[in-house]
Image (cartoon, rainbow, N blue to C red; front, side, top):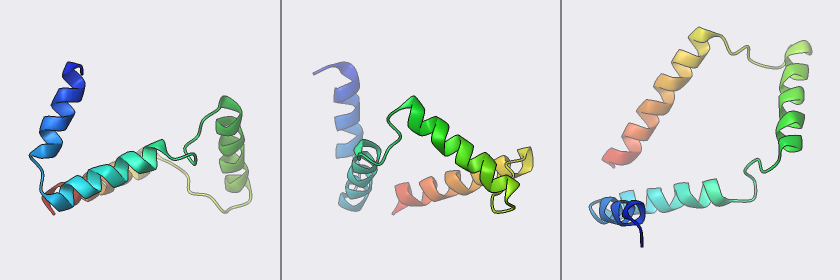
Length: 83
């Protein structure tokens, strides 16, 4: 086992059972086959996103939008860690 693996194990052991479940759910999600796994798939999704803007369906990701999204994600992650 390497230092990173030991660090992760130590950090997870220090969490409550509910927090450990949240970590496992997160790991399951990032390892799921639904994660983008090819350049072609990524390009397809990017083109679809641009096309949706042209159809008036998408959200324009401005600097303000990214700041709000970042704040939302930070708040959500903080809430997960405090449960």
